[in-house]
Length: 347
Image (cartoon, rainbow, N blue to C red; front, side):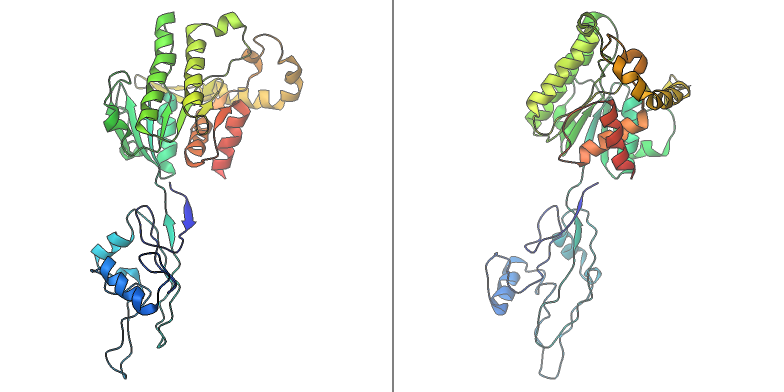
């Protein structure tokens, strides 16, 4: 959902609805007289003979100029020329005076529409991200090998589901118009399979997004659990770390790496719902309550396998939404930082 900002004085242009509200500016951007402005306006916008804020001249000394006070009075063509994207505009009543002074028009516009591509969008984490994103008004495209989920849910119809594989997909079709890419790609298997899924697949996606000019890339990675180095060198963790390095090198000022621990929620597998929250939610509460007591133990090898708090999949999804909509949100985020980012969106 685009951020709402007050439009500045200037020309109507794509992505925002900006209306001249002073006779100090004209369509060419120069300082001109009232008469010059109207003449230039007619040349720039022949279908709209007078600026929205300026009444036409009176037909006689006894007649009074009139002009529609709301944009709804204009034709659809005029509307589309003034508001190039979906915007929310509010206008003050245009009171017309004999001295033809300008009437201020307040405009609030959605100047940025987010369009997010979620890789692995039909999975456990990916579907939660898609659901959270559409609930915030973000346009979502999902790319996954399974395509559209088979279970019914109202938010599913609001997502564009594309079946495909990151190694063979048509990136031009997938990434067109996107403002961010979110990758939830990951999995287990043999050493070679884990390197390919967790590392190579994500690296391919990062490079495709960068070459296409996508401004932000968000990677769902994994907490290292303070594991010994010989475990972290395995295909799963080393693949994830290679993908992280690619994100941070290609997107040094906008790349996002989220490192959750155990992710819980209601997970669907082959039509069955697995209530991971029955385990994860109580564990999160207990570990959060005793956090001050367990911190001294965090230096012990693999201690986080016991003491790292789980993360609700909905919180992880909201953290992603925060990353998508906030240009100042980038870098590597720990479990606690993920929860803090989610809390900011909940408010």
